[in-house]
Structures are given as C-alpha cells and as structure tokens.
Amino acid sequence: MVLSSVGRKKLAGQAAFLFFDVVVLALSARVNQFQDFFYVADIFPLALSIVSLVLVVILIVMDLILYDSYTSRPQFEIGFFGVLSIFWLAFNVFSTACWRQIPFKCNSIPAEFMDERVWCKTLQALKSFVWITFVTCIAITLFTLRYSISQYKRGNKHVFQMPLSRYRPEIGPSSDAFRAGRGSEFLQFEKLT
Image 1 (spheres, one colour):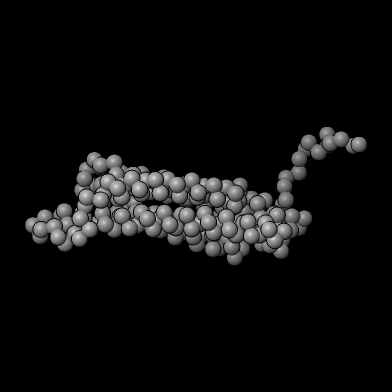
Image 2 (image 1 turned 60 degrees about the vertical axis):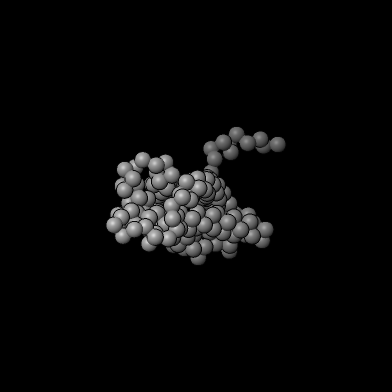
C-alpha cells in the first residue's frame, strides 16, 4: 500500500494523538489507583482515553487494511475527530474544575506525605496531558477540514470520494487509479429516454 503525502501527515497526526492518549491513560490509571477509583473527575480521563484509544486504533487499522474505507474519508474523520474533540473538551473542563483545589506546587506538601506528593505531581502531569490531547485532537480536525476544503475549492472534488491516505490531487475521478464509485446493478433499470 502506498500512502500519499497528506496520508502520511494524517497518520502521523493520529499517531501523535495515540501517543498522548496512552500517556493520559497511564497517568490517569496511576491517579485512580491512589484514589481507589473513587472520584469521577479522575475516572473521566481514564474512561475517555480508553474509548479514544480503541476507536482511533480501529480507525487506523481500517484505513491501512481496506483500500476504500469510508471511515478514512475526510467527511467521516472531520466528524469523528470533531465529536471526539468536544468530548475531550467537556471532560477536561469538568475534571480541571474539580482539580482546582489541588495545590499547583506539589513540593509545598510536607515531606512526610511522600505518596501524596507523588500523587500531586502525577495529577499535575495528567492536567497538562489531557489538554495536550485535546489540542492534538482539534488540530487533526482543523487540518483535515482546511485541507479538504482547499482541495475542493481548487476543483479536486474527488477529495471527498476517497480516503485521505490515498488522495492525490492529480488523480481525478475518471482515472483508472481511482475507483470513483461502485458499478450499480440498478443502472440496467435506468430510463432510456
């Protein structure tokens, strides 16, 4: 399988998102172990990172395995990462608001509470990475939207008819390298007038 240049950039962005998502998963698991999975504000990043990890891995695998996967087309990815961005934003706002009482300077916690100090530092790292993950997700959405619209305005209307990982502007919808659509058996019933 040959990936186009925009396809390589798209997969690199998704890989970066997965990397940050795994970091959030690890940090939130560590924070939740300390709290015995009690606080909802701590569980939200854990749950959302697991869901995001599973869904984005499925999205990437389908893109790499299937030649003409609908889930790899710009309109699907814009919607998918747009909705995922909204979830990350909503959960981050809720969790960050709940974490506002935790001191920013974790070294101000007395030395005899070393476990609490480590938990505080882990939580501060988690605060940072949940927002980095959100920014990466919204950046993927905006990049895909901007690129697709600019290609469409240049007359490359086939950008919405094929996966971005295989999209090349020079391949038109009438090219043999591009399957513009599937042949329908209903064409035989088309009016002859």
